[in-house]
Image 1 (cartoon, rainbow, N blue to C red):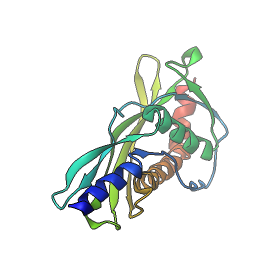
Image 2 (cartoon, rainbow, N blue to C red; image 1 turned 30 degrees about the horizontal axis):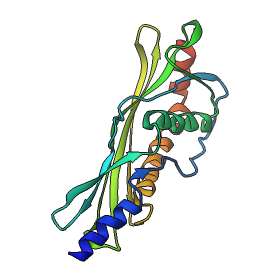
Image 3 (cartoon, helix red, strand yellow; image 1 turned 90 degrees about the vertical axis):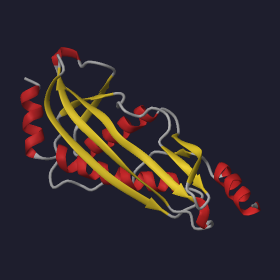
Length: 193
């Protein structure tokens, strides 16, 4: 019983939040230097993004949250992917001036769990699914694509952040390849006219 109490105490001490970041992103074969408007916030993160779990019965005991504003932080990550592809980003609150399109993000899944019963080996795992869309005024979607990333970590003191950042890096690498494609660039140029 003391072991379980120690595990719960250490889970609380180790932090119950995710510091959202990513590793070095892949470089695309070619980049673009065109401007692109990016929404200031994603949609889809509403509070808890996982559970710290204890006992052999996998009982949820500690809710996990993203440090700060999760929807804002997700868009900062998306912005980094666009910049990696060479785009000059401008963050907009709602609608871009002059009827220009805006790149928006919907977080479909952002969920991570851990299992502390095997302490000090504490596996943490989860996945992130996001959908980007290029939207013209009047909510006319001219491009849409979904992205997926998985993350796993056995790092007890930083497991959630480590697993989430591995998944985020996978998602962002997929985004870099997508927005650096000729197809996306052509659609962006047509949407801006």
